[in-house]
Length: 337
Ligand code: UD1
Image (tube, rainbow, N blue to C red):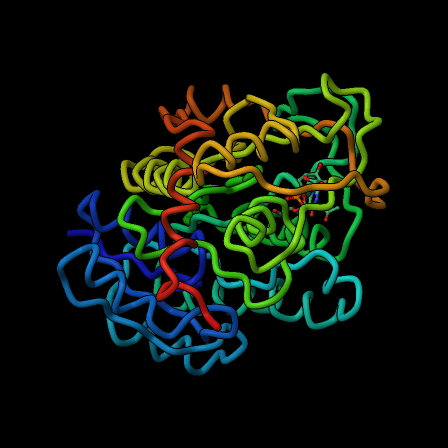
């Protein structure tokens, strides 16, 4: 049974990836500093998988601790999520973002190199594409960044490619996600922002639970069918399965790859709101607010390359994203107070 180290495995996408990797037959150990994760996620993963969950409570900035983790077990590969991810915050504390996301990655890769582990799946983001009016966005599109968060993801991709250029033993999967949404069908894990969310789906979820009074729709005069912003929402379980397929390719000795993980399908803010209303069975209040600075009218990916290289195709639809999100947030015991 191949052994995988999953950094950031207690977080939103990381925990769903733990479940998917385990289901696919991998033996997985989590490395997380729990800075933005609930302490009970490992217990919940035990309930989902029916097996003990091994956790290393380690920060990726602690190089000695990383070395100790790699000395404790022989890993066959690493899936790397551990990073900071709030766009707005990255503009306020850029050096912290660069330190955790870039230095953390370098630390991890040096520890991997020392231990002779050269398979790496990296959590990147569609935010690495330069603003474009050409949709859907293929992997060959021009790259750029509009936030320090985006810069750290772009640098991460380049750090990995530089290492692989110098040492042919490296095999990597760089996965550029579009907008993750939804939760695990067990309703035991999901997205749990500790603060007022910036992203649409967790914000709508908090309007549905009554924690927030109404959704602010950021602009309804975009050149889209209903005037509101269009994005490529992908079910977090589909996203998690994309990591399994990326890792499978590396385990089979196939080449490194850089692929979008999206659906190729765009939905508007109002589409999402209506789908969530169907899921929770009640109308959700909203008001139209000014456009958010830096937002694009439309942003969705071309998923063809992930399908051709990895056999990846998102299976779950908008209603599944909203129904599983609602099942997760409407269980009071699931939420941090
Ligand atoms: C945002 C980030 C992006 C990051 C991604 C991570 C910005 C400008 N972009 O992308 O860099 O990679 O999150 O998931 O922060 N919306 C509302 N009301 C809200 C929240 C959002 O109307 O309260 C609208 C937005 O204008 C947008 C859509 O919903 O049209 C999706 O927004 P969001 O979830 O923040 O994702 P992105 O803008 O795609």
